[in-house]
Length: 63
Image 1 (cartoon, rainbow, N blue to C red):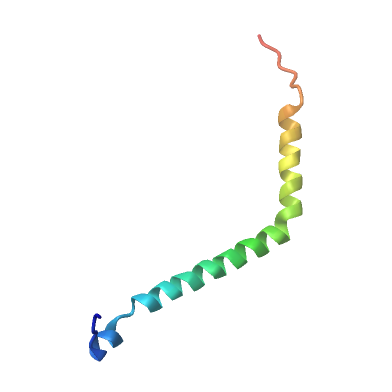
Image 2 (cartoon, rainbow, N blue to C red):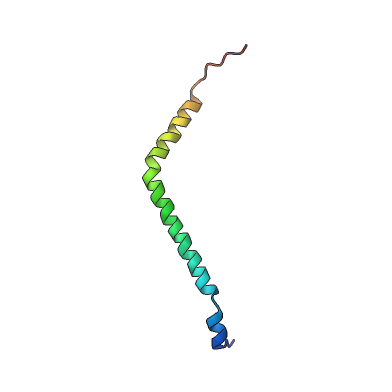
């Protein structure tokens, strides 16, 4: 069994840091989901418009 002194245990903050990173990642995921939910229909329409324009035949004349 490994013994850790109380002073060393109090100084160890690696667990707290990983929890903070986890909370930041979760918050970022919530923000991304909210933004995609808000702008999803507009983004879909814009991408469909681009796809339609790209697939339409172009009148290209060469000189």
